[in-house]
Amino acid sequence: VLFEAAGGLIMPLFGAPGDEDFVRLGVLCIRIFSISYLFIWAEICLRVFLTALESAGRAFILSMARTVVFPLAALWACTSLFGLEGVWISSSVSAFLSAVLGVHFARSLWKSVNARNHEDQISAQPGKEA
Image (tube, rainbow, N blue to C red):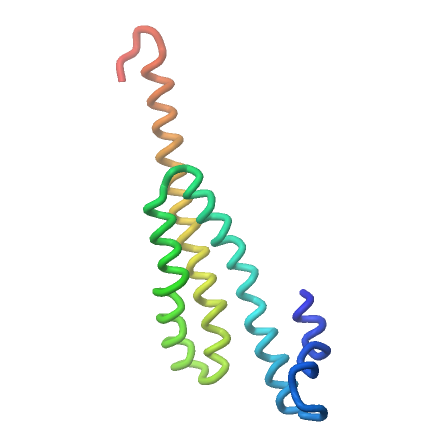
């Protein structure tokens, strides 16, 4: 929200005085790139969740997807579609794809943990066999 609201105030600090083209391009870049932060926090939280539940393999896959696979694929696709603006859009696309993968991993892990707990409860009942 800060970057969206104050982009026009931040960019002149980095350019030559009166360089309106630089400020315009910089504000556009900040606005596009700042969207990625909405998805990055979700991916980080989900990766920590996976690690905490001893699913290091899934956390590693998510980390590699976030830092290598998705950025390269998104950069190629977005620059092909949007040109120079695609460079900045690719970060948001990459972060979104990482968050989606993280949600998928967390849901599948959650389901398997719940199924295991359900089986443990059934086998713990007297007179019941698993």
